[in-house]
Length: 546
Image 1 (cartoon, rainbow, N blue to C red):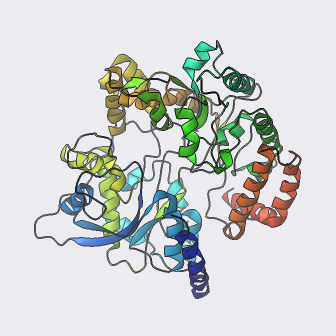
Image 2 (image 1 turned 135 degrees about the horizontal axis):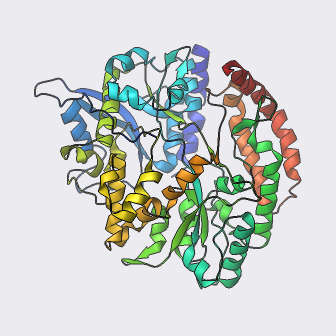
Image 3 (image 1 turned 60 degrees about the vertical axis):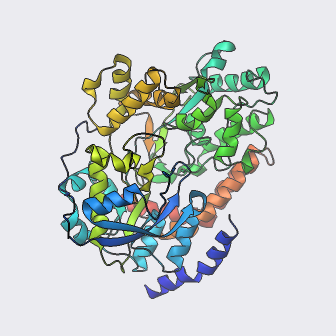
């Protein structure tokens, strides 16, 4: 263990220099047993680290040091929150690496699956089995095992709970968003197949319905295969060719293989290369982040983009100007290359974990934060709306919920069944959860003329992203990653290298710098660079489950 800790410490200087260079449950959960702190009771302090999200806007006079959300936690459950540091979201993950490597952990922080394993092996974090069992409310325990306990199992090492999964609903699909006003103008059909998609892309390029003089077919940014790229990515494009980005899928012989090296990926890359050659993809996509790539969408140069269900919240920046809707968009299921439906790739619903330092004096305080988040996020009292909106208790676009330092999401929901129907019929009687009610309220504001809520209607309303989910679920048009264990030893050592090599080759192919046949060479190299060993380890895990 000491060797492992020294290994982590040894890279601290290198990392610090690098960063210095960077500027289907439909019922509400039972009520929480948390009670406000009585006057005179001791307040305990817990430290963390926080990302400064661009969507978080502070009320005047407030900051990460002092704000209404932190005050509410201290008042309601007696836990005072402090930050060892705050970093911009673009640098946050790199700073977490430095914090780990420097052995300078706060009381708790959010880490990825690889870091969870490293911290466990380095004996730097606490076994939470007892503190969780004794301090988590029944509501919390029920909430985090709605999936049968699969997500919690991923945080177990030698039957010890080493982290709290930052859970979310794994059934989060990607969609194709298209300018429907342009489809009407050019008399084009809605996209159902990749042939439709390509015809639309070429028409948008040639006809330039936005009148900008520089049009492309599809918005793409510089990290198109990353899980973090929820809009302007290419994972859903791959899915349209029955190809998948870095998940483990069945090989038809009882084992698992990595999706990155399957022949269908080559087909998808060939199609992307063809699009690039035809000028359907911005030639500078490889150096543009999501926001920069999205500018071409906002300014009418691009009318198609793949993205998650929340993508309309990004599109609204161009769709609504001066209170008027100036772009019409539609959400569509992923088009397919053949007669078989495209399967949207999904994970297990957890890839990050909250861990508690072995040096933490009040680990129970972290579990209290967890209890309170679950309670107020699912059934807040009017007073507890402070956790979502700040001191005014009203929606004003500040996203104060981002201040809660420990957040977990519901593992199952029925938004797609409930919301489009409720919004279409103005029927509040079928709304059950807080999420139902919040989304309905926002969508109805749009119906009543508030164009700032255009994005919510495209997510939750009739024909919106959520409306496609029941059909996808019913027909099982998704493919879930079959590997959910902790990263294998070779994954820890080689995964980043393999992904870096993959992206390097894929980008060269897409940008027509090399032949698509370079993919075959990449497969051979992937296996030699550790892929074969990882595959062996993954299959040992998979065999043990049977």
